[in-house]
Length: 243
Image (tube, rainbow, N blue to C red; front, top):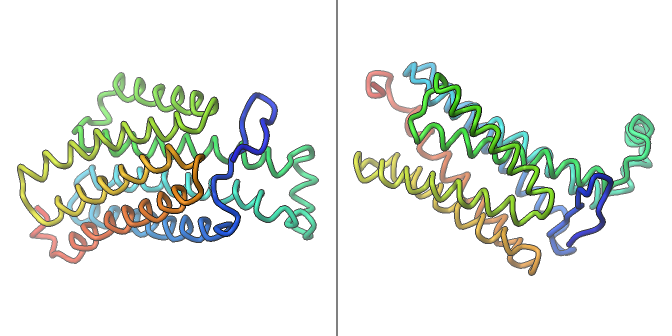
């Protein structure tokens, strides 16, 4: 549902049905843990292999971690407005005079939009085999992330539609990679992004049904768990097998 539009026309959203309040934050907290593990495993893979793509994976998952933290912060402001009556909450409230739970939610959502799209964009750069030396291309894609974030402020569906397109491209690219290499790790990665793609399709219509939102959250979590599996498999291999 849309609560209100705060200054600068930033809408404040909460999609969860009331009976699911807090449970979605728990699911996203699990997604944060999974993302942190992905950062750890991908960085370890980078140290073992020296391949920059694993370092870029780590950067992408760091961006997604920030995105989920921002979303939890924003929804928690709506779910638990009494937090401002605590000593810590009162201090924060005084430091940011004029910030209502709705404005916190709106600002947090914009941060969530930006870092989520940035994370998916980095993943797209990895599978597209673009190097960080392609500075003009990277600048253009970062501009696209800023533009997509700004457009998403108009309506949340533009954000999820953009994520859907990015994940469609990512999934298709990983599927082609799987058809070439035909190994178990590539299959897990392709499946994971396919699941994330489905979750974004559900999120597009989350505003119309609380049940759809719940399903989207659960499917998205499943996608992140599937992403963790190939990195665990790679990390357990001996360095000579990673060449």
